[in-house]
Length: 154
Image 1 (tube, rainbow, N blue to C red):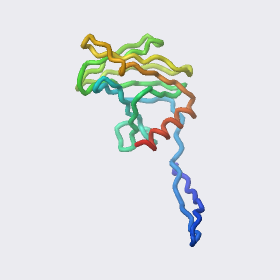
Image 2: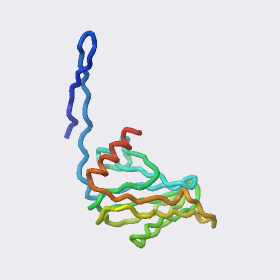
Image 3: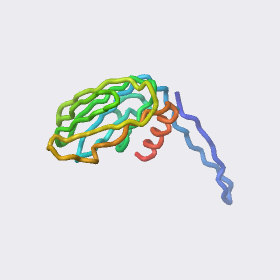
Image 4: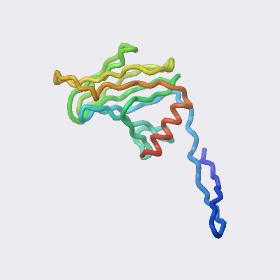
């Protein structure tokens, strides 16, 4: 599917208009793989872009709360750049580690909307508040708006 071409009038002495292409609409998300990386005591995420495939030039990067769409099968692929971290989703009873040069996966389904705790830990024995954030499970439309914002920020 291609984007839609819109022409916008621009007021000027010559009365020219400008045409811009709207991006392709996002497809409904039934399954989603997200790369989660621990680095410098923070989590960062890489999402597939509009092509729906992870590892291509249109991938989107984000940090802060982890946003996911409701009604999807999720695979979080965890790795680290520097230390051994642990990611925990207490409301689902899930924990997994992130280690440099290795990838571990966490799989679950998002069956309800809400804001949930996403806990992180680095195995040095000291707490790192920057590894504790939120998992935001939202409607497909809200998730797509969030992706649009992440795309504009790229």
